[in-house]
Image (cartoon, rainbow, N blue to C red; front, side, top):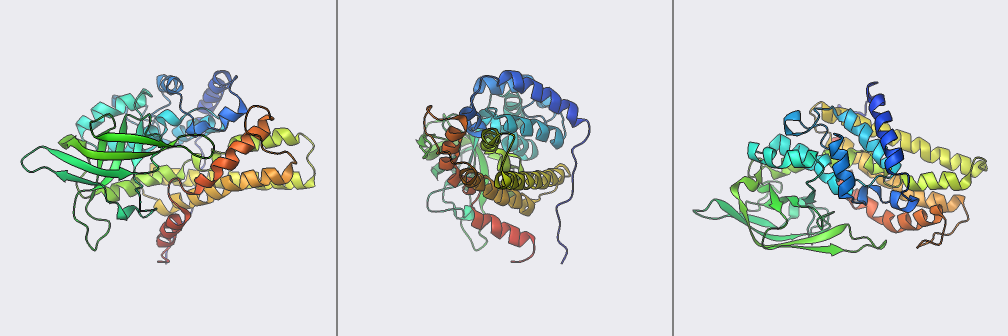
Length: 385
C-alpha cells in the first residue's frame, strides 16, 4: 500500500519581506489591544480592521487581480495569516470568506457569482458563513435534511430547513450551504448541492447561541420557504459533496488550527519570566516543539493545496492534532503556575486569558468536525477502512 506522507515545505524566501511588513503594521495597529481581546483573535470581528486589511491587499490574496486579489501564492497568504493570529488581530469578520468561500466561488462559481462576490471579499467588506451542520445529524454531514426544491416552470428554488452551529451567521451577509436537491439513496453522498444564500432574504431567521465564555459566535439559521434564484447554485447540481470536501481541506489545515490559543502561551511565558524552573522549562519546550511540528504539517498541506490536490486526510490530521494541542495548553498553564483563572478585569492578563480559553477550549474539538469524523477520514486516507 502506498501512503502519501507529510513532506517538508519551507516558506519561499521572498515571504520574509512580506512578514516584516505585516508585523510592522500590526505592531502599531494593535499597540493598545489588551491580552484578553488578543485571545479572541479569529473569533473577534472588527469590520473596520478587515477593510484596512483589504485596502492593503491582505484579504483574498490568492484570488486573481481581475477580482481585486493579488494572484499571490498560498504561502504568501499563510505568512499574513500566521502574523495576524500570532499578534491576536481581529480577523473573524472576513475570515471564512477569505479562507474558503472566495476560493470555492472562484473554482466552482459562475462568472456572475465571481463578479458579484469576489471583489467585495477582497475589499474586506463581504462576509460569509458556512451552512453544514444540522440538528439530529451530529457530525454526519451526509445525513442532512435541509432541502432546496426546484419549482416546476419557474427559474428558482425554494429552500426549507435548519442549520446549527453556524459561525458568524449573525453578522455575515451570505451563507454557502450544503443542502439536499435530490432524493436520498443508498449512495449517501449523492443528491446534495451548494447554494449562496442571502441572509437578509425573506424567510431567513438567524438566532445566536451564547457560549460559556459569554460569546455568541455560533448560531442557528432557519429557512422558511426561502426563494433562491437559479444563479444561487454553486457549481453543478448534485456535486455538493465533492465540492464541500474540497472546501473542508482549506478549513481544517490552516494555522488557526493551532494558533487560536497562542495568546495563552504568550501570557504564560510572560508570567513565568526569564528564569523558569525545570518543570516549567520542560513543559514550555514541549508545547513549543508541538507547535513547530503542527506548523510544518500545516505548511505541507498548504503545498498540496497549491499543487491543486485535495489532501483531505492530511488536513484532518492537522485539525485533530491542533485541537488536542489547543485543549492541552490551558491544562499545562494551570500545572505550571499557581495562579487562578479570573473572569472580569480584576485579574492579571494571564489569569484573564486563562479563564477565557478554559471556557472556550471544549469547542476546539467540535468546530470543523469532531474527532470521530476526522479520524474516520484519516483512516480512509491511510487505507485502513
